[in-house]
Length: 365
Image (cartoon, rainbow, N blue to C red; front, side, top):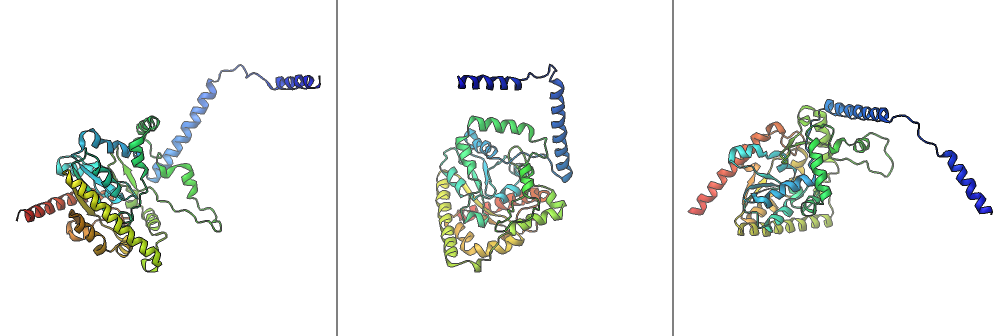
């Protein structure tokens, strides 16, 4: 009896709380909510446009996968641009197409060694074209692969991921705020909150690019027009730099082992590509400032680039060997300004053609 009474009392109490919604239409509330959403999104959009942002495609793993599948879909005889961010920023598909008559496939991945892609294409029977391989010493000879997940997306993209990419691409060309760097929590993380003891404040790479639908990429012009923003990028690149002569013996030995391993991987991949008729051309892009100090000390040319070219037997284009590839503006030390990238691409194409002719002439002797 006690439990029955308790149950009925609880039901009575709940019934008092069970009130019907007022008999009013919800249309007004829906319109008010929509208006508030539009106002907030519009305000966020205007804020970033005023900052200098422009609409851009998001350089996602799925966007890379779309370009990678061009090889599977009948374009395996094309020129493929590979490497890390320098090949991504500096080499412009529009200009390459104007010079060569064919549009290349842009598969460079920022912060990522291209050796993995070399191996991937070497194992792909569909690829028989020309592979331009950018050599950024710190990445190439370490084997670091910041964007390795792009390969997984290409091979195992789910229907949901594919649909999400297609929907995202419908709005990307129109929204200036729709960029990873402008996400709310990313912005909050960069705010100058008081530092906490024993906690390192993260320094993340800021937005640097404007990307087209086929991953044609050039440096965001804010780095050219805003010296303070360019200085922030330089600060990020130099953060945590440790002079090579201050490394301990274990770290030095690890660096030497990594060099040897990556060169051997590149040699094996180059040989496999050559056997099926593909051509490999290595490219060393310009660098200044912090990189002009760090790269020669960590990976001296004679011990890395020269060894790579000798062992692979591939054509090697080093910017220091060609006057036409010098004198370009690098606002943040590592990448050519967007306003000069077309001119650089044309110069690179012409140098490659000249070096090809010289090589062929020597072979014919």
